[in-house]
Image (cartoon, rainbow, N blue to C red; front, side, top):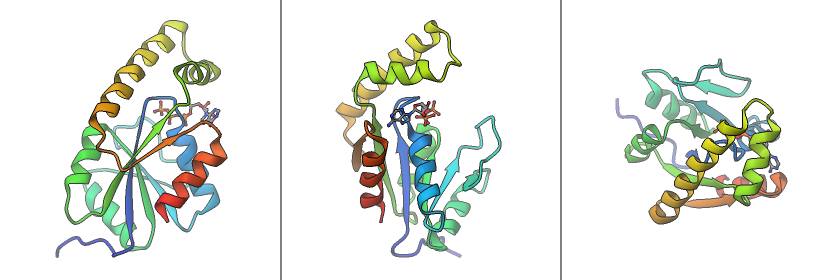
Length: 163
Ligand SMILES: Nc1ncnc2c1ncn2[C@@H]1O[C@H](COP(=O)(O)OP(=O)(O)OP(=O)(O)O)[C@@H](O)[C@H]1O
């Protein structure tokens, strides 16, 4: 049987530098509209799925398409390569959102506020974020950039784009 998502279904790859609020934004979407949004996390994640999340294993594509066929907007927070594979799959109507921090200073403050990382780790993640933002800027292959400054406004942009 061919895997074909329902016409109005959406699969959204959520990408962007570590610590810029991808997970926070996705969980806000699930909290606000639990009957609409679900989050698929990579099977490489070290933690168990939280409420509203689906963990992806070998049949990831089938489970994504299955959820989309059930009318859900499936947000993917997975490794960049995995996201590109899903995007390249013609049976899935996938799009690509890039979440940007308002500034590198703000991103640094968020990483530090978690309190789980040493200064050296924060500096390393910021350096990676600089590279990621530069690549994304040149790459330009995402459908929707969202600046996650005010969380409520960022969520409204996500909702407007997704629904
Ligand atoms: N708009 C915002 N304003 C202020 N703080 C925020 C905002 N969005 C997220 N944060 C905070 O930033 C920190 C990192 O957020 P989050 O874990 O969602 O990032 P992430 O992009 O999913 O990170 P990772 O890719 O490492 O999993 C958290 O402490 C979160 O509460």
